[in-house]
Each structure stands twice: as structure tokens, then as C-alpha cells.
Length: 139
Picture (cartoon, rainbow, N blue to C red):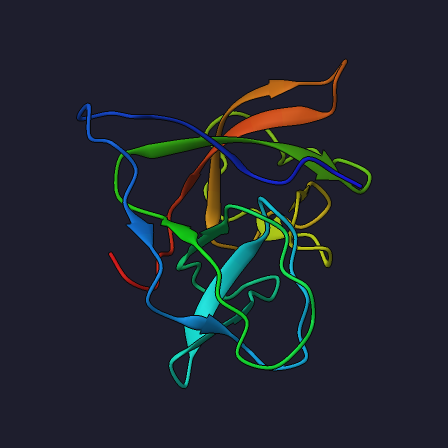
């Protein structure tokens, strides 16, 4: 299982904002570091080009009315995450429309248009990168 998105720091020195008042969508499981969005007052997996609300802080089992915690994706927040797919020429530092991978735990380096992520640094040896969420749902 991929590590998912991991909060690194905030440009302005702000501590992460954690949200606990919303439940996971019924019968949907989630993994720590997975990108989510808020739909009808419930957390659900974010799609490849969806605005991202935040990232789950722990695994969530499928079930009814499952509580969870999400780190809000805010302006100035940096995240380390793996990338998947065969990187295209446009997957370089400064790219600003990287898509989420289907697993929601990594970026899709083969899709560099229409996505919510921008990339600052890429570690090709580890297949990881440092990202900002450019297209955010709640901030």
C-alpha cells in the first residue's frame, strides 16, 4: 500500500487544521493519506481532477456512520507523496495541474493537465514528489 499524502509544513508556519465533525460516506473505506472531498456532508474519495478538501489521517473501515479525521488542504501547505504512472515530459517542478492517481494516495505523473496538484520537487529514485494542492475545495 502506498504511503499516501503526508503533511510536511506550511509556508506561513501554521499548524495543520484537523476536521473531525464529518463522517465517512457509508460503506466506503479509506486509507491514511488518501485525498478526499466533501459531498452531501460526508467525506468521500476525491477523483483525478476533483478539488481536494483534505487527506485522511487514519485508515477507515467501510461501514455505517464511520468517524474519521481529515487534515484540511490549505493555502501554503506542502505534502510529500508518491507518484505513479509513466511520467510524461510535463511532469517537472513547476507543473501546476497534476491529476490524482485512481488510488487517491498518489499523483498521476502521466496526467499533467486538469488536476488539482502543483509540484515543487521530484525524487525519481524514490518516485516521490513534494506537492501543493492548487485546487482546494474548502480553503
